Length: 304
Image (cartoon, rainbow, N blue to C red; front, side, top):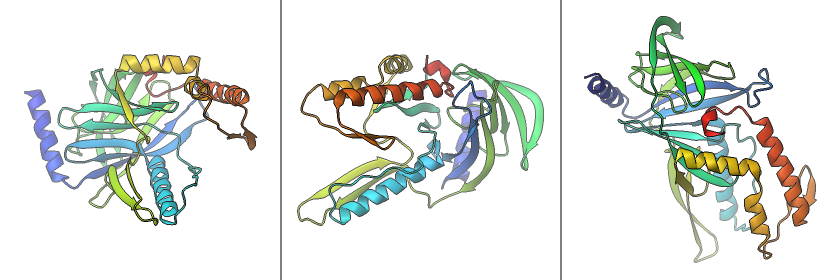
C-alpha cells in the first residue's frame, strides 16, 4: 500500500512538472580526508523530467558545451589539427542518472581513461525522524541512512512532489534539500529550483559538415557525461578495476607504448617529454600523487 502511494505521488508530481524541474545544490566536500578544512565548492544540478533525472556538475556541463562548440568551429573553418585545454572543468567528474518510477540508479564515472556505467546494487534503508526545520521557505523533516560506507543525515520536504535527491539518494516521501555525512566532509545544500522547457537535452547529436566536399563528421555527445564509450560493469567489477588502477595507474599507457608504432609527446608542467620511459615515470608519479590526495570519495565502499 505504501509503495503504491509513493508511485502515485511520483506520477502526479511528474505530470505537474511535465516540462522539467532543475534543482540546484551547493556541494561542499574535502577531497583529502587529512585536510578537512580545505573544502571545494561546486554547483550541482538535479534535472528532473517525466521519466528520469540526471545529477551532474554545472561546471562540467559548461566545459563540455564549450569544448564541443570549439570543436565545431574549428572543423567548420577546415582545421584538422587542433586542441582544447578544457578550461575549468570542475572537480566533480561523475554523473548519476535515475529512471522512474522504479528509480533504477546508475553511476557514470571513469577510472583513468576508461569510462564505466555502474548500476547501484544497494538499497537505501531510511530512518525517518520527527525533527523538522525550515529550509528557505519549505518545511523539511529529518532522516538518516547508512549508504556507501558513510552515515548521512538528510532533510527532505514534501512541498516538492519528488522522491529524489542529490547523487544516488532517493526514496524519501519528498525532495531531499540538504544532506551531510557524519565526517562533515561531504554536504549538499539546496540553493534554488526552476522549471524549464528550453534547457539543452542531456544527449545531443549533430552533423558537422567539413568545408571539403564529401567529408562529414557525425558526433554524439552527452552533456555532463564523460566522452567515449561507457563499459557497463557491476559494483564488484568496478572495485577490482579501481584496485588495479591504484597498483598500476599507467598500465594502459605502458601497453600502448610497448607496441612500438605509437609515438607521443606530453607536456608536464611546461616540459615537453617524448622519451617513453621518462614519460611513464613522470605520469605514474603524477597519478599516484593524485590518488593519494583524492582519498575521500563520496562513496568509499566503491573505492577500497
